[in-house]
Image 1 (spheres, helix red, strand yellow):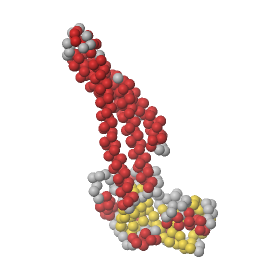
Image 2 (cartoon, helix red, strand yellow):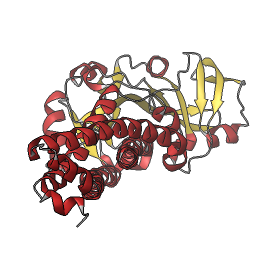
Image 3 (tube, one colour):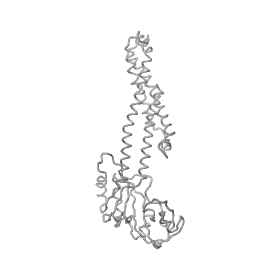
Image 4 (cartoon, helix red, strand yellow):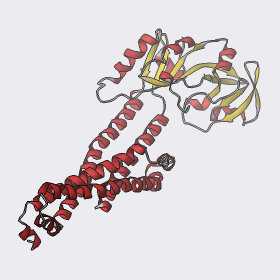
Length: 364
């Protein structure tokens, strides 16, 4: 009995933990796809924006202070971009600030600046290649000296010709202190109850950001949303089904075990024990075995997650799984194991106790 309960509980815990780790990993993968909201000046011409790679017009940097208390966008990245002369050609000078997180969250920065100092630049691959520059070189830009902190790998986009610097340094170079011309952000999670995500985003952000226009990159945002909803649906259906199957397996074993002990139960009846007392004895014995098996199953399931989580889910899963068994999981495993085993044993015990003892003692 205890062994079957342990296997059932371990199976359920393994599935639930792997599902949680997979959901976390999916969120990271979706996050790394990129930011899917662009907040531009109201006067910016979108055709020119997509052709040049940056928007005309300006946004006051102080507007960023208004977007902390909202639930539709996170990881806001302030930017200032302009085409500037550089050597014999031009480059898109791009100042990037650090990510700002809504609702005071503390998250690992992913999309913000390169942590360049005010006298450092980061170059796109083509911008560096065209000028023969490598990391560590010194260059002059708009009359100021900078060191090349890093050269980025090719992206196959307009980013390959950008020259990146800290937002403060670029604002100073362009003579535009406290001004931006773009804010990029990541649309927060919205469930199936939101019929029109774009209208939902606009209804919250537009009052907070007057004088701007909000562009939702539908393909990126919708792909992220569909994947998240699909994962939630699978978990919602699969987890209860697995728990039910485990409960049926344990209950079935308890029922078989109860029938196999009919002779013992018949002996109890023969010596005068009541059906209720016999049922209580059998039920409590099964419950104790179920509790032991449930607790053991929690530890077995946790060990399996640590062993195979990395292989199934990917980088970091084993470490996350190895954070330890939660006390609530131990209690729940023991409780569920005991209840299922007790319920499965009680019915056959009562049936056998009410049978004629002469019949049960003969094994009929």
